[in-house]
Structures are given as C-alpha cells and as structure tokens.
Length: 77
Image (cartoon, rainbow, N blue to C red; front, side, top):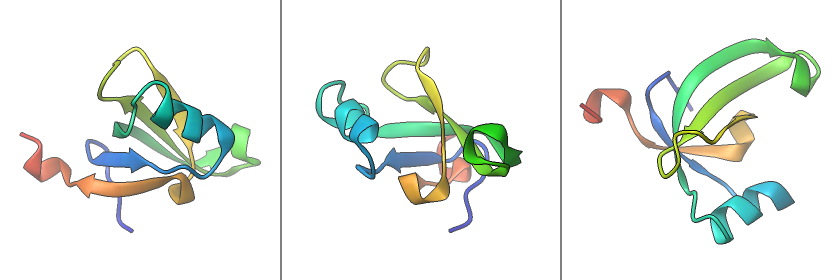
C-alpha cells in the first residue's frame, strides 16, 4: 500500500480507540499529514500522522495496519 502525504485514508477498527473514534465520533476519513520512518511512539517503527476530515483539530499517529487508502492526493484537488 503506497500511501503519500495528502492522501485520504480510512481509520480501521484495529483497536479499542480506533473503534471508539469510528462509532462515537464518526471519524472514518483522515488526511495523511506526515510519514515518519522512525517514530518513537511505535518503538522506532514507521508512523503515519493523520488528521481527521471531520475535526481538523484532531490528529494522531497510526501504523499502516490501522488505515486503508480511500483516495489519492492527486484526486483530492
């Protein structure tokens, strides 16, 4: 899965917090803002910084297994 900054991704229900964001807050779609190959919060593994499309003040770090590509950034303009 080739994800780039600016792509729209779906937050998958891979853990309790993701399920809560999806069910209570209706935050399914997120924009990729940064991709870091060595993120401290994941033990120096890759992390992807995403921002909610519903609430741009809500952002979080996730791993590739937590998201699914919905729309390429070339198609979001």
